[in-house]
Length: 144
Image (cartoon, rainbow, N blue to C red):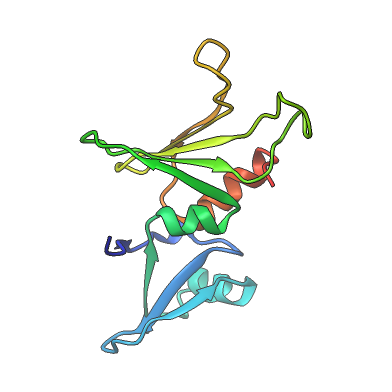
């Protein structure tokens, strides 16, 4: 599948935000993680010669954050399912528990424990547009 990108708004930028940038009129894109100097330049309006884009969250991004791909759904919303590589509870027992991610085409993400539907615990249900946001949510939820 071809990578899809969007142009981020200024309020999406923060230290640690992963973007690609190019000087206007050029076709070379450079991957960069925003640091404090970059953020200052953007907020002060100093950087007026660059164009930014961010890749929408995809399978490759989730797998790079320590998740394994499980399956691709066939519904119109086409969910992709991932499982965490390491259990978060009851390690080494038959009751090991793993976090699961469901990624929908509309960038909605559900993170849950998927023990079974009667005892499922959803810890996140919202929009995650890119890898940087996924990392922030995982950090807030203490998912390693």
